[in-house]
Amino acid sequence: MDYIFLVCIFIIGCCIASFINVLIYRLPLGISVSKGRSFCPHCHHQLYCMDLFPIISYLCLLGKCRYCHQKISKCDTVIELLGGFFGLFCYFHYGLNTMTIIIFCFGMILLAISIIDLRTMIIPDCLVLSCFFISLLSIPFTNLFLLEHIIGFFIVSIPLYMMTILIPDCFGGGDIKLIAVCGLFIGWKYLLIGMVIAIMLAGMYASYLLIRQKAKVYEHMAFAPYICLGVLFVLFYGEQLSNYYFYIFI
Image (cartoon, rainbow, N blue to C red; front, side):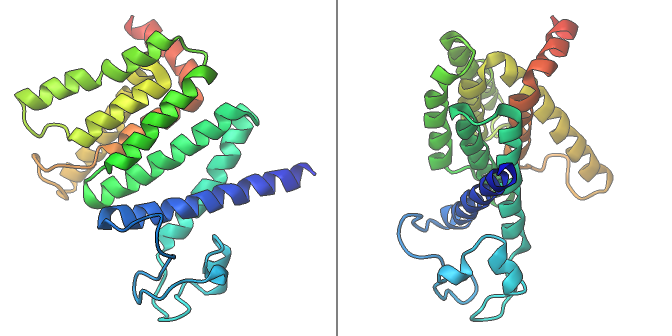
């Protein structure tokens, strides 16, 4: 019975991640998410139910569109798998409760933001707004005081906003808004740790690109994926990290 329950969680995670794929494809193109059936991005043929089963349809179709036989992006299937495993990870870490569902939904939106930012260097406002509402919804279910959430909303976003005024384009407006809503969700202490992780990861990757001469010194890079990774990391391991962090730096 337990295995059946875990399989159900995995399937639900894959299905939600399949919808995240729709967001990732449609939002940058300005296509409505709520209107119109799913279609092949190559031949634009409408997809039917048999074509929309996460992972299974990809395997049955051998990774090709049923109608035009063009290759289906492997990234879509990887994202579906990530959704399934992330759902299981949330369940094993937090159990089955309201906060688990909230964290899963928040993580899925962060995944959409990360992929879109990597592809387009743009963070859609509607996704940031979704994170904002989820953050508000989560407040009664956390162990933090309301003030910690409020401080988290401002503690990093305001300094970064001031930096963009003094040094134009040093941070994108989308990054600042994303940091603000993440701070509202996890509180100021966890946000500081998450930002340290994000900056370290981004710095290491930027150094790698410079060493390999794959980027120039003043070239912009997508920062949202690192913010999201840092935030997700502290969501699951924030308590352990905060003990070390504030012991060392405070």
